[in-house]
Amino acid sequence: MKTLLRVITAMTVMLSIVPWTIDSAYAAPTLKIGEVASVNDKLLKENAKKFVHLLQMGNLEKAFQYTNHTFTEKNIPDFIISSMKKLSSYQLIQSNLSRNSVHCTVTLTFQNQQSIIPIEVKFDKKGKIDDFYVNFQYSKQKYQLPSYVNPDTYDEREVTIGSKNNAVPGTLTIPKGKGPFPVVILVQGDGELDRDSSIFALKPFKDIALGLANQGIAVLRYEKKTREHYIHTYRTYSVQEEFVEDALASLQLLKSMSFIDKNSIFVAGHSRGGLMVPQIISKAPPGSFAGGIILSSPNPSTTEIESYFEEDSGGMIPEEEMVFYRNQLGLLTQPDFDPGHPPEQFALLPNAYWWYSVKDYRPSSVARSLNIPLFVMQGGADFQVPNSHLEKWRLALQNNTNVTFKLYPDLNHGYTIAGETKTVQDYMQPKHVPFYVLNDIKQWVTSKPKN
Image (cartoon, rainbow, N blue to C red; front, side, top):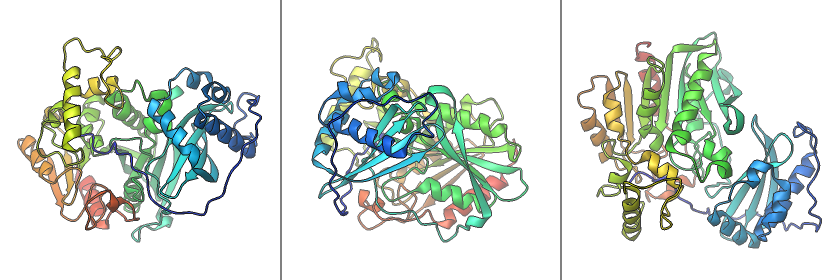
């Protein structure tokens, strides 16, 4: 079973409670085109609060006064509406505003006695709400630099991946020095992950980016499209839109940069992102990538559907839920299945298009056809993708002479030292990707011949 990180768990923490109130006037503001950067921050925060409050009250018509027309045309997922109503009993404890190249985001953080839930309300350049996201994998823990990172050895540059309505913001971490530098593109796994691939208190992609930049390797990481444009994409995105398109757009962006070694561009994917690495490489112009890195990805020799019938599935889905999945997958395999008009009883998340696009993909078949170096890595204490899956990669690629395999006995799925529980609790306290993992990646990248 490969959809392992689509886990929604509320974090149990305590903060001081500050009650919030909202006035009774709900008139949407009138803003001039392009003014979002100069709009009063207080006004944006107030509009975000009003929008969320209206959703909590179930008043979608008035809530849509604050949104742009593309948002209004989308249907908010039913479970999000239900979650918003439950959050009406929470209290607002904080509001923050941040800007990137795509959105101005107001984050409203709510709390009750059991959990803290941030809601990200995203404004477009006209000051209208374009999207929002409810973050169920939040941690109040603040990121601290790993001991192996010297901030004087690198610079970070904000970039935009893609264009038009589905562009996503990213961060390019660049070693200081002359260059040109080899570069690694990071691709997250399942779920609506940010550029750091944050899983509660863990930020493995940030560790990897800073750690590799300290060793002379540039790294590009970015928000997933399904996070930055959650409402816009939720009902219709495919696995190609989720993983492949932005990786290829990143490739084109990097090729345009003089300080990047265009013959030393690598792509690294974690979990399902790793499963998609062969497809990403195969969809790029020949010779575009110098190699691929696969971090803790499940058995590559099964399709998504077949994986739900494997015994070694990691234990993330209880047996009774497995019965539900298998019945649903029976609908997907019908010859007349149409993702645009699925059967009424089809209920697999995120949507029918995603499942239809992934149902026949067998990563091993694509990987075997690639004449390109691969580095397949696996944590030995991973409760989501058991370490036996590394042997399945080894078996699938046994005839490929340019593949390196490495098991890290003490590491979990987030590439940090596993705790005693070997559950999601492992992700609740800040830890870092160990230096020896980054050193292995560095040694592998710098030893590869240029393409």
